[in-house]
Structure formats: C-alpha cells, structure tokens
Image 1 (cartoon, rainbow, N blue to C red):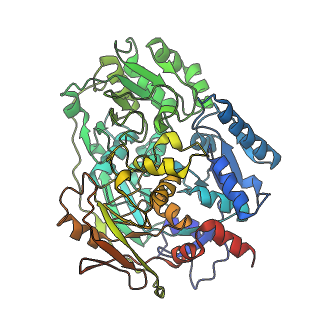
Image 2 (image 1 turned 180 degrees about the horizontal axis):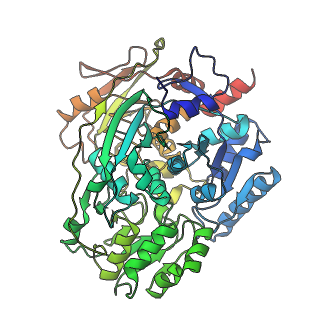
Length: 605
C-alpha cells in the first residue's frame, strides 16, 4: 500500500515532523518549499515580514521575485514601489525578474525551478501550474510568504486527494483548455480544497503546454494543489475521490458567460452568433508558444474583424522571442493584434484593454468572473487560443471549425471516506452575531475585493469595506454592521488568493464566515488573519429552504446566530446544525490573533 504522490512529496519536505507515521490527509505539517515565488505582492509580504520582527530572510536561494501584475502602471508611486522591491531583492541576494520579463509562473518553469518531486510554492493562486512538471504546486498567502522568508517554512493541512484519470486522446481541435473547462463545469464541487493528482494513460498523448494549462486551471476547479503523477508507482491508496475522463469525448468548449461552472460545446455557442468587442490572447494559461501558434493558424490570411480589438501578451519575454523567430508573432500582429507587454495585464483587470460597460469579450485566460477583466457591466467568455483568434476574426464567438464533437457527461465519481485525525475540542470559544445570509455559490475574491485595490498597499480599510460584493450586490456593504456573521454558499472565496478579501470582510465588521464550502486560499487567509472561517453544509442547506432569494442578494432575517467552536454546533432560531471542527492549527492561529503574532511568539521561544 503506497501513499498518494501528494503525501510522498509532503513527507519529503516536512520539517520537525514527529508523528508515528508520515503525514497523511488531515495532518498539519510545517513544510520547507524548494522555491517560493512572489510578484507585485512582494511589497505587502515585506510589510508582513517586518511586522514579524525580521530584517534578513532565512534562505534567499529559495526565493524568486517576478514583477508581472501591474506592469503597465507608470505612476511615480508605483515605480517607486517597484524600485523598492528590486532594491530589497538585490540586497538580500534574491533572484529578481523585472517588469516585462514575463508572468512569474512561466518564468519559474523556464528557469528550471520546478522539478519532479519538488515542493514549489507561490504567493499566487495559480501555483498549481507547477504540478504539470511533476512537482507539488501549492498556492500560499502573503502572510505565509512572510513566514517562509522569516522561517523558511509554512504550515499546511494535507488536503484530501482527488485522482483525475485521463484516458484516450483529444480529438482534432481540442486542447488542454477544453479539458479544464469541461472539468470545472461537470464537477464544480469535487475538487474544492483538494490536491488534484493527474494520471492515466491519456497523459502520454497530452503535450506539455496542455498539461500546464490543465494544471493551472485546477485552481479554478477549487483545488489547493496539483501534481502530475506519471503512474510509475502502482498501488497508491488514500484517494478521497477518483474521476475518470475519456479525452476522446472532449470537444472544443466555451465557458461562461462570467463563470466557469457552465461550459457549452463550441458548436452550440457558435450557432447563437454572440457578437464580441474584445478578445484576449493573454495569461499564464493561454499565451505560450503553442497557444500563439494555434491562434496564428486561426488568423492566417485574415484579419481582426471591424469593431473588435484583439490584445496579445506573451506568457514571457522568452515566449515572445520564440514566437517572433517562428513567424507566429508577425502573423498575429499583421492580422491586427494589439501588443501589450508580457505580464498579467487585462487578465487581472489592470492596464490597457479592459472590458467596458456593455461589452462582450472572449479570453484565453483562466478566469472570467464578473467584473474581473473590466466593468461589472461587461460579459466575458473563456476558450482556447484558437477559438479566441477565430472569434476575433469573425466578430462573434466561433472557432476555426464549427464541426460537431461528442460532449462528455458527468460520470460516477468514486468517493472513499477517509479517516481524519481527531483532536480534542476547544473549550469555551463562542461566536455570536446577527446573521447575514448570502447563499450564492462561487462568490469569488474579485467580488470581495476588486482588482483596483489589490496592489495599492495603502488602501484604507474603509475603502475595501465599501467595495465588498460590489459586482454582485451593490447594496451589500451598506447593510452590514459590526458583529455580523456571514453565512455563504459553496466555493466561497474561490479565485485569486488576494488577502484583502479577508481584510475587507473584517473591516466591514464581520466576526466570522460560515460557508457550505470554502476555497482553500480564502480559508488560509482567514485563519492567518484571525478571522474564523468555517464550513457547515447542513446550516446552508437549512437556510436555503427558508430564506428565499438569498442566492441572488443578501438576506438579513433579523435573528442572531451562535457558533460554539467546542461542540462544533451552529444555532439559529432554535435550530442546530453541525459545523466542521477546526484543526488545531486554526485554533492556534485564531487564539494568537493571526499568523504574524503566532510566528513572533514561536520565534521568541
């Protein structure tokens, strides 16, 4: 009987583990990553690092800084921030990549920092992409990154492992992006908080760039980590669920609008001739050399349609050089593509080319949340680079071909109940406040904190508070008062790992968040910042039957909710519902007031 690949890599990177056996699902271990990448958020990490009381990083050889998010910002204040980040990195001997070098995740792979069997982390949600190289790719938060700088390690609760078994071969015209979109739509809840291990005979027929796109988008699937397991070890056990997907059934798909939980075959969407005004060949999920070559093929001999703007940004400067040498870049530019510097740009909603109110866009990037790429009044679809380019050429959503393909259906998912370590219940901890029910599933961090605030380090908390739920429920913030408890739907906090989402909720006055399920990065951010974040599918199910309309707008019924962390019970109007018990690490962090205080206390011992 063999451990999962996730457990193997965790055991090899655990620090000071004293358990009777190697760490398994449900255990909390302190891990030392082989590499940690930070980007524009380095300035915020630096502030947390100094708050811990440190002045020198523990091991600069493990750290990489790549400026890639707000690189089009030319304000004096922003340029000064970039200069300060560079000065800090160079003075500490940290590998540094200036703005325009490319997206950090792509650079990490190009520089050879991601290797099979490694543990590679980034203070960015798309660190899952490193799993494509056989490493365990793990997204951490800014506070985690500061702890790694100070200590060289971070805490991690070993997640349940979902095994994705790929069989067959993709049909002509389908790519890794289609696989990812199909999985997000067919199985929206199966991977929440899990480590996804991708294996199976279909892997051998999946090109490396397709593997990277698929691993990258396991983040949108809700996974906390990813690793490709080549299957060399037979007899692994301990999987929480197994999903088998026949690649031969995955035709070209389009996801949206404004969600990855809905994807349709290209032919069905193309038949509706949905007009577009903007198209995007951008991001760490859809702007590598093979992606740009596919887009160029779809545009060859033609041009971007009148009234459409096609934006082009390579995943890295090295990718752009490769595309120029191959002639791909010239084809795209001659067809009318507008070139942006290599970086995140419109994918994160920063810089030139954002969607304006009333516009419809289609993007090869990894997210299309409402308001993420521009105005909340715009509409966004996701698709492969070839479909994006063909749509830009036609002026409506279409592909190089509209041939019918088979469409996979949801298969039976084999779930295996796993034993979890049982800890003593904490005594005497009780949270009580007015209940605010917003039971919409998939509330993302772009809705909790708009992109315009993410890299403005001095944003006042009250400005963050006023923008909570802005794209989804504009009146939300004005109705909240200090001491409220938010009860939310499934996949709450999915998307970007931005820590300001938690800061904004606390600034608005919430003393706890209870959801049907929590996105892993949001949960880490909450505990690291001293905000109780809990899961209670039973409570949410009970409220759904009573509070009509709470799936679209917040409902405040007027009563209070009490949560007893010791008994793991939530009480509301005489009814009780079970709450998933908090692990010991969460209790320690909440008792300390957050990770910064916890690290300071541990360092003083």
